[in-house]
Image: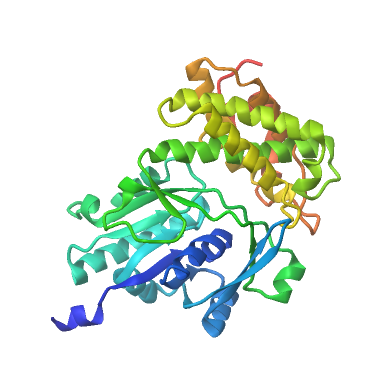
Length: 390
């Protein structure tokens, strides 16, 4: 073996996770660490990076109304995204990777990944690297593929060397309060739900054995199930709940109102009917109804303490054409299906004005509010990209 390959030996039991935030730590880091992987987080927060490197472990506090469980996640370290050489080395020698940076984090992350992929090929040869995509984006694999191909040489064998594994992330992780973060900056709260649904066809390497990971054939259907049912239902409860109870802080508070609970359920069922028309061979009425009732129970988890603000904020993204409300309406229009309940939730979203624990709006939402002053027709046309006459 030549000296370069000695220096760049791949470690199959190492996962590089871009984003040490709520999903990165509470879900992906947890599952892979407990499945025997070493965890390397890539992040931009210097305090978080320093703490992870000093302590080399963190706590996931699993909260439910029945009990609280504390998991210790170990074999952990972190690298700054700004440390280009270290990031490239970690990607070049990793066994698998994950992305959990949000769409706003992609411009800073993807160029570095492209550079590392080229380096990996130069040093390691034809050794594929799979990326588990933990992003709340429809068609995230297509977006990432397009952007990476722009950054890589034309002759780079992308389809052979890069696996883009779409996921359906159903785990709910609340925003930590200032008091909780001061108590332990590394701890993270989460609900008990722990199933990681992944695309079987996205992998270029053999599918790893990881606890609670469920590979699926028709991944587009499962991504849309998350969007059309889970995301839609959660935000519907926040928007209708805030409209009727603007003083409420927690999700379980607004869902204790039978009218909000029933309206949310009916909206989810309407979207489920659209989803079944879109994927007639994948889901049944019984499957989706049981899923909806399970979600509504999880949304009411008092111990989790999820807030109306967190679930409803970030309106530009959540009212976007490929997101939780506009996307099912768009499909309903094509399939000539009813969407009146979903439209009611969308209209409530336009007047959503919840604030965080410090009395602040989500930063980008203040610009949305100014645009929304132009009226619901403007929001539908310019933000949701829906051509609907009201």
